[in-house]
Length: 462
Image (cartoon, rainbow, N blue to C red; front, top):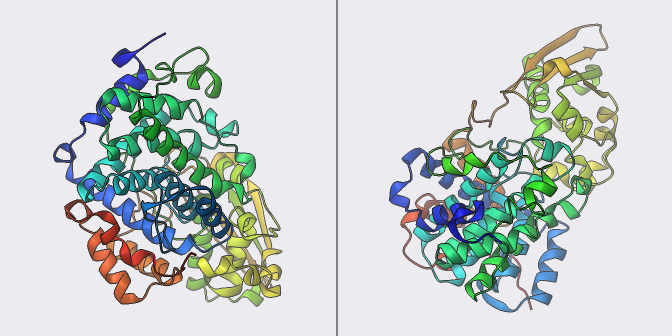
C-alpha cells in the first residue's frame, strides 16, 4: 500500500497545508473574495426555498447544536450539519458560480465546508480565505486530472470533485498538518459520488450539501487519527480508475500554486438563477426584444439553435417544478417574453404555473447544432425570433455576461448580492453592513460567527 507524499493525495495535501495567503496573487485573492461574497448572497436567498427548508430541519434533527452558522436560521449546528444545510442552500437556486474547469460549481461545496471548519475552530477571516482558496484550487486540480468524459458520462462533477475540495478546505480550516490532510482526502475520496440523473429534482442541491458535509466529516475523522487509502486517486481500484476510465493527467497537481484556476480560466458568475447552459439564449432574447420593441403578442416562434453542451443539459421542455425549470430553455426564454425578466421570483410555483408564461414557453423551440460548438463558447446560442407580421430577427451570442471573458463587474456583483439578501429577508442596512465585512473578509479578526451574525435573523428554530 502506498503512503505519504509519493501519492497524488500526499502531494495535494502538502500543498494545501502549506498554502499561505501572502503567496496568493492579488488577482486570485480578488476572485476568491468575489466567489465568497456571491455565494453567501445566493445561500441567503436559497435558505428558505424547498427542499432546503426540509434539509435544514433534517440537519437540526440529526446533528448536535454547535457554533457553526446555518444561513437563514438562528442557532448554530455542529460543523457537518451546518455544511449540509448551507451546501444545499447555496445551490438550490442554481444561482451559484460555475467553472468550466471540470464543468462544475466549486464554491457551493467548498465554501460551506471551509466556513464550518473555521467557525468550529474559532478561526478568523484569513483562515477562512486560505481554506477556501486551498479547497477550491484543489477541486479544480482534481478536475484537471480527469477529462470531460467524466461529466458527459453522467457523473456530477460538482459532487465527485467537490468532495475532495471540501475535505481540503475543512482540513485547512481545522489546522491539520499534511499527513492529516492526506488522510482527510483519502476518507473523502472513497465516498466520491454524484449522478446527473438528479438534475431537475430535490436531490441535486442535496448532493452539493452532502459533498460539503462529507468533506467536513472526513477532516474531523482525520483529526482524530483515522486513516484512508493513500492511493485513493491512482489506485487500480481508486477514483481515477473507476470514475474516469483510468485516465490520469497526474502532472496537473504540480500546477497547484503555479496556475490558479480561480483566475485562469476564471469563474462564471450568473446573471440568471438557472443552468448556465440557458444564459446565452436568455440574454440574447432579452437584447433582441429590447432592441426591436417586441411584445409577447408579436411573437409567433422563437428558434434557439444551441451547442451540444446546451442540448444535453437543458432536458425539460415543459417543466412542472422549479427544479425542472432550471433546466428548461423554453422556461428561461418564456419568462423573458411573458414577464420581461428571469429572476428568483420567476422560480416560484405560482409564477411557473402562470398561463401567460406557459403560452410563451410553447413558442420556444430548441435545436441542437453541433457546428456552433467552440472551445471558448461551449454554451453559445443562435436565436431567431419569428413575428406574426412576417418579420424575423436573429443573432448569435457565444459568451454571455458573467463569463470570465465577459465578466460581471464588481458593482454588478454587489447589486446581485443585495437582491439575494433582500430575497433572503435581510434589510438593506444589514445587507450593506454584511457586504462591507465580506469585502475585506481576509482582514476580519473576530470570529466569523460575529461577522456573519446578520446573515441568520429570519427563522427562529426551536
